[in-house]
Length: 221
Image (cartoon, rainbow, N blue to C red; front, side, top):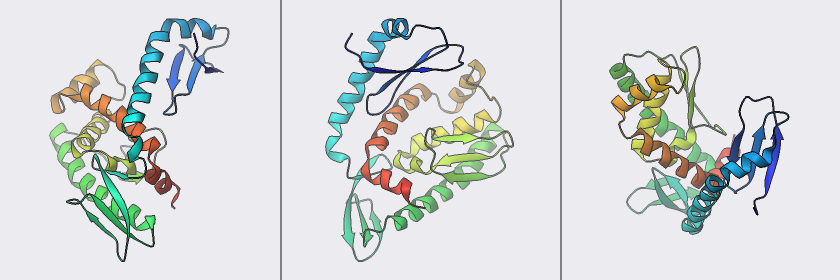
């Protein structure tokens, strides 16, 4: 079949296939299941996903050193002071200090989340406790059983309407914990284009994984 893949055996009920941003294929199967059968059944889907990843990477290959902010790419320049210029799509960093950028991003996101989470929670008739902002390796956001909301700082890479969708998504989880029919029906009331939003989020996740500036930001304490 010409597909290289890694086999992972776990105590799972159903097999699944994961493809990372670099195109590495992982086949996760329960004990005593033949992974080759899973690959055969999903071969067409796998090749489609690999093509999607490769096409997207080729399309944005020249943007990996630019900073992805609010769904747009900003040039990084050396300057005497820190500033973000939305008109010229440029970010000036003094002595290439990315910590300044991280602080600015966190401040901006906190202000937005404080306002919009209250607004959307009021519309949904939901109460939450605290909001946390941190880098998350595998999720845009999450919520706890105690009613706390955690948001990935990388949300600042997204267009504002996708951030709105993520806030709504997590707030609905405080009412319906699982991704079942009731959950998506509730989400659709406040964000009818949720399927399109989910597809766009997958694209942006890949772009972030390839972006050199965001990679460096994750390493800054």
